[in-house]
Image 1 (cartoon, protein in one colour):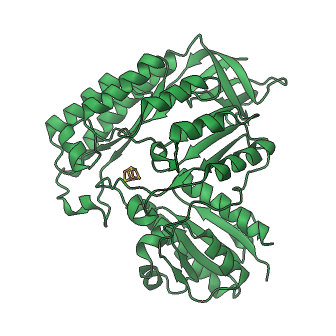
Image 2 (cartoon, rainbow, N blue to C red):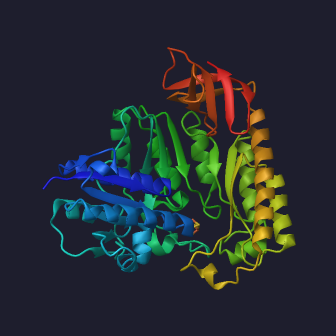
Image 3 (cartoon, rainbow, N blue to C red):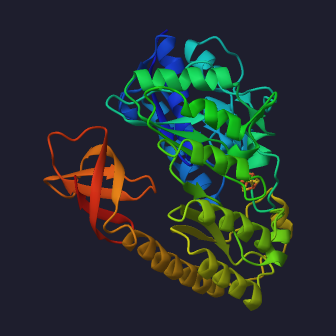
Length: 431
Ligand code: SF4
């Protein structure tokens, strides 16, 4: 039986990529994608377990979808991804009518279920070998940018993070599969690729490490821009900078390096495996070689045991690094992690006050970074019309900033734009 399917995706870029890969797999087997769940008879919710809130949202959506089964007898509704992996059978207790629960990295099982060739409904053993499926992820018509997963899982066990438990240990994909997928994407009109992994810096396939992989990818003809996320400060090596420098025309010096805290005591409690001075040394190397580098980061406010001194160390770290962007979060307990055994002892109002100050500082430096780009010419990857600014086109600068510029019929996929005005996250200019 051929099904009409829809996939609902929560969470990170990796989940978006996995949903794209599942879509290709289902289409290859003859099932038909539909834009709206109301028109589907096979619905998959791909979930994220990083935050309790995201998990709750996904489960309540799932419960709503499962309730549609009362009226639509042939409808199958299931869950895949990190929440499925984490909760497994518990989901049946919460949503008894659910048809299938498929953990991480099991897109092929979901496809078998759609085909009608599978008995049972819970599949949550972690596949230690899975390195990605062989078919390329779905690419939207007219898209210029795409994600490609290069490795899966994580060995780092940061104490606040659930990922190593739900995505398993690190496995790197073969360079042949990665390169074939990128070439296929380029042939479909893609000019920018973002390489994905929980820690791309620890990519290794036989003797090939991440800088060597990056070097190979940069030689693919037709590919014009390469990004990569996420880096881990303990694994970020000068060899990566060598490769970025060698392919400066294709790899912008934009690095997301999650700091999390400026306090060595808190970094140790988080099991991050670097001190702030080690982190700073990496940043100094980056700025020495790429003075305009866009360094962005993640920071957690109010981790257990964070006192005023630890918090001040984080503020001082922000002042030293002058990040182009900060993604700040307030700590919340994630059950199943090592940190869930620590007393969550920073009062909520203090967490919020610290978070707000980190955000305020983050905006200040983000604005400074953007303002420094006024007068420069940026190679902007054109995305299309700017929906909120009629008469303007919208694109992405190498730093990741959004750029708006007056509509121009000669605009190519990557256009040089002279920046004339800057907000915090948006730049304005002219071709
Ligand atoms: S590096 Fe740390 S934060 Fe990132 S996925 Fe691995 S355990 Fe989680």
